[in-house]
Length: 200
Image (cartoon, helix red, strand yellow):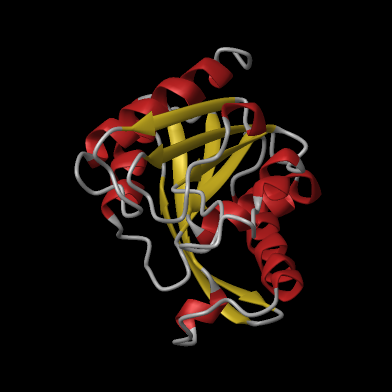
């Protein structure tokens, strides 16, 4: 599904649950794609608990760029993408998320797009070796519940438990969360299943 944004076309790959009860919109990191092992594992696990999953390749990646540009422009394009997905898949509660830079976008735009929660995979708390440049305010400012799943060996750091509704730190995992992606999927699916229980 192609979606035209102010930054050019974005692409959404939608896997629909048989009886969907929630829409989960996921996106990639700065230089990655939507076929990252953790994103695929989350898709598979989320489908298993009744979530329709849309994996979005943002416009800057479709255009071949490896950096998203200004946060304001990235967020503007993201909001257009989510609005188009909600129009196509109406009536479902929305949870959005992503890995690394995608997690940051999901936090920054959660309130604007009407998401009821955020899934932040490998949230990049700070640039490697620069802990003084913390991005924890993006987590705290999301305005909705945020699930953070990080590895304990992530050079981008690990957020504090107090900065999210739930923090899961996976031992032995780095920033790519690819040692045991199925575990990442289980954590996310369990959390969103609990949220779906509020929407019988």
